[in-house]
Length: 63
Picture: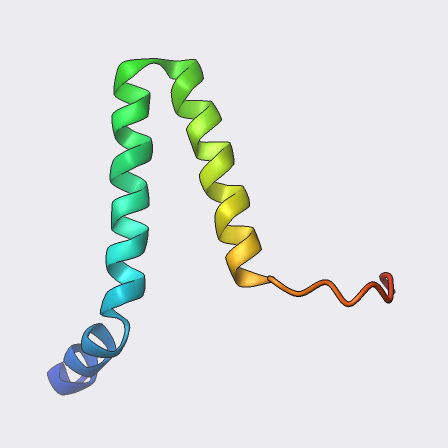
């Protein structure tokens, strides 16, 4: 794989990479405090990511 392609990918997605790394660091720090706090924080972070990935609900139902 060409090094320029990897560099372009990192430059184009630096905000996403830093966001995920920051959330991972936050969850890790909460796990270092307490296991229950870490699990709670992980669940909240996963819900936030899910809402960011699918922000619109058109109300038409599934299927």
